[in-house]
Image (cartoon, rainbow, N blue to C red):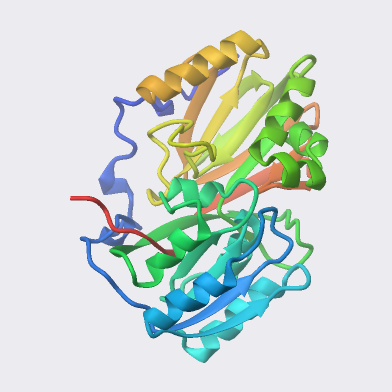
Length: 343
């Protein structure tokens, strides 16, 4: 059997991402609006003190909020799940925006609690990687990001999320909403190697160090994919399902075809365990935005993956144990305040 009979769906930089006639959920809100300044007058601020950076500059933040005449309350989380609870309370209180100081996990928790609402999130990066803020061009310094509350031109970006079907890592009933990055194989092993302490100390470099340990003998696997009903077979060392293009470092993206607002999830398979080949492919992505061997890419709205032999699965940084993974796109799920587009 061919390793990738779904060749027509493979994405390159010159291919259209998707036929717009087939995107029933497309919206003009998917792209940022024209430059303007909106001041969010009533704001709840949710702070995760366990984030891996140096801490929130509260005096500077207080002065900024006073200068903007913003009415605000702050809530410090003490345990997992509390950020979502505070976000739901903020909605009930009718605030204009919810500011979140923390890493991607904290932002995800807040977003999952307010899916479908008109209340936007203001991300104040405070974690070790902050991939979402990099993806959205939000300043990495949390005080610069706080100016998006009304001190600088801002806009609303409507983001897609993903739903992990029937394999809820949180243990609750129903599907888990995710921003969405899922890795099967090498990435799962990397997350096992890069513990919390290492990530707090080294951030993204913890994953690089872990990768260097695992690349010496990565496990090859066979991936059986179902992409919007179409069967695909491929071998590789890692299968990634994502709607993030950024890797959290500068402007480097896995592919310029990946868009967090396009109503699609992207599937990428790393087929080659050779470090030189991976570096060559990464360089090609950086310079041209095109996928190259040993990388394969597809796009779909619903994806099922069966892997043989079973491999470790990492979902938005958390490890789960499943035999089969099924995910679907949740288009236009949450609103985020971003820098206004430059004209």
